[in-house]
Image 1 (cartoon, helix red, strand yellow):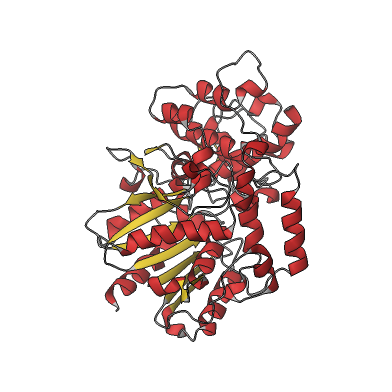
Image 2 (cartoon, helix red, strand yellow; image 1 turned 90 degrees about the vertical axis):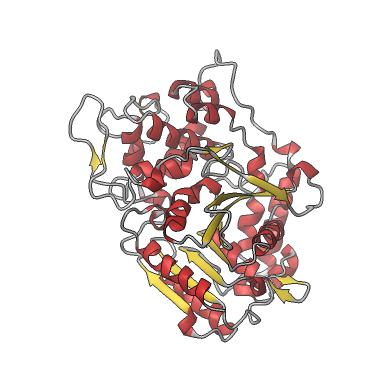
Length: 470
């Protein structure tokens, strides 16, 4: 188990540190009344127990606002990831709500101890012991339970078809408000955006119900895997020994999510306490600081672009200077941060949100596999193998507006994919907002940067254009 944790801990800490925070802004403050996920009926997936056929959203903004920006998280990310960004958006655009999607797999999570910690009813040590400490200390008998893969085989079917059909229910609910609906996604969530927009809903493209698309360092490459590759992925997933869940960074579920949630919460709510992981012997040497560090110090060291290893590129942010220069236990010096580390921790811990955090502890492997066949909405043999209907990539509304932002991982490719998608349907280039900050923005900086944020600076005018045009 110790060897397993050596692989798990860095990613969880890395991902947890990825969410940056407003240090002292109104948007970083916890609401007086905690937010919660609104669950609605989802797609009746074959073989799935009815209690999991649901999709949720965290709704941010005035209920009187008619326009809705629906945001789809990326790989292993949950609805709370977008909350600080959403609060900032609605503070500038009163006519909009933001709905952050909570996918069905998050119903499998045990949020009980995390809820207590966020409410001040449990200590950081109790939080750590409940989710992780018991793995090394058999005397800890009160802890969360792993879910055997054999009991959730239905999760192997939770691919793009399920994600799109669940999202369809969210879009339909947003439409009922009577305003404009824009669909956006971060990272793999961008692939879901393209899949939804080009999905064939009984002869109508999903984009027919949308006024705009937003791509945040992710999208759908205009190429597809082969039918042979698709068949191989299906066969691999169908093997009795195969887990339904993605091994994020090579780490088996649910540990990456567990470390992310608990690590971000400790860095935010007990930042100055000595970090429990550093002396445990569980961390790889490239993540162990040369001096004793606090919870927030360990977070920053693991995920700041200046100190984080290349293997954690997808989890990094521009978090500040580095470890604090003084102290028997060194904290974090956040001066000059593009994404303040408190905002990071808020995004991933879900502080101010009941029963949800900013990660997915159980992310479907099938959803990752299916993204390779979306192909900017063009029919291809792999879609037939994987049962995808993202085939209307040449039939999007010509008045559709598209905003694509490239950061460290997607870069110029995100913009190019958006151009191709628009050209396929003869959407004029004047409807596109294309911004590439690959050299200056880490993968998670677009959602986390504050108070200066190039992504945000273009998003608000984009939403204003959408709401003001018919």
